[in-house]
Image (cartoon, rainbow, N blue to C red; front, side):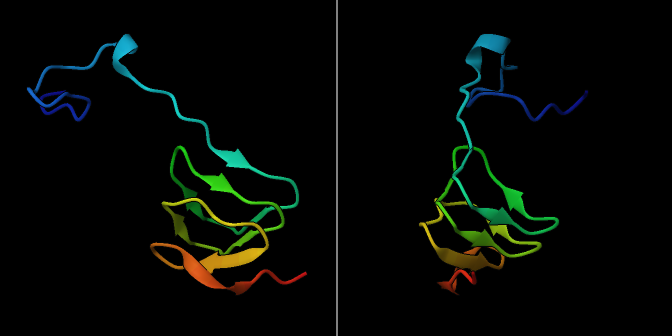
Length: 79
């Protein structure tokens, strides 16, 4: 790759030990719509709903509906 994207601030290539793993957590009863994108390190709360095609960049509280790009709270999650 002539223009790698896996570099640090100085432009040096990252090694396997340079990566930080951050879990993405989907709690019980949460629902994720088709083609939604959830970034690493986000938690989707219990019984929350992510709308189709949404881009989730922050934690989602329990029992809410989020949608859009970036995903924002749109109200309570339907039962």
